[in-house]
Image 1 (cartoon, rainbow, N blue to C red):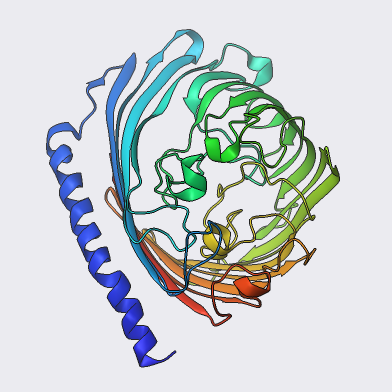
Image 2: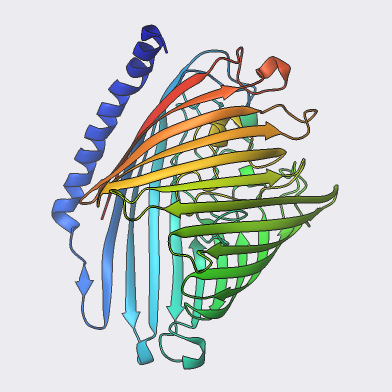
Length: 448
């Protein structure tokens, strides 16, 4: 990397990063003085005031042709949000419990907007973030285990498995993309508005044994065509391993927004995860068969990892291969286990593509925890498009990041390098060049 490139990178990211860290500290400390303790805390129940502020500063050396609004050049932008709410619980007979949460948020994008043109500095919004109630059965049904019956309803985030198919409703496009038809207020990367608008979920079974889940999910997200889902899952769980099957059907969509023709799509999956009886081993896999109007599609992955728990920092190394057929609909996937779970590549998975369709991906994940509140990680990807007539999003990405938790603060700096094989003139998405893209970001959140 040349000195000139390094200077431009630091100049593009550093000033905004410093300002956002100061802002996060300032906004975080003021409410902490007045409302750091629970509002009510008794033997029969609790009521808390919940507060979170998050900020991110980003820089990308290249832009991407996802929105038809970007030109060749760099992007430097910032995102921020403030979230405030109440949460409480009430203890009932036989160890059962009623609980509820309600929260709202305000969010905004600053600077150039992201390199794919999903958002611009004009994007902002306010929304009801969560509003749901739940009930856990405690010891009322011993045959089903502790909390063997668990029901929730309302506006909340729900996921299936490790997020391979459904993780959250976080896609948040801005007003300039597609003429504003999919506008959700922006703040694309942080995506603080990630709850399904309406849900009902019933879980039968405890921490081990046979567990069944039934979900109804309704999204009001225009970027996802406002889909409505039915989900049924059956799992067998032990203390160290899991095997499960799921059925997901798209019951309805907004026809005017449903460019992917999602209505009626049915997805069947089988998955497993655990150590298979070997200490320090990690194995995870899932296969999904999807029936669409255009034909059958499939996606699958296999992952194996090892933790060296006798070494300082207990480093772990995982390798994963994933495959997504030409027109597979990845539904509402996302990160559940950690960074890089199913948003594959911080640059590729968010801006350049591919987005878990028409691709096969080799992925290596290294992580170590030198201190209890500090960890470092390295993510490496190789992307290969399957059907080149649909798109040529072949490329490589390496991401280096750290996570630091101090009291109620979470800080994550990251830097990466993305190298596409094709530019936008030859079926790729990077505008004007196939040269590598140096990108970086800094995230800060404060929560109580």
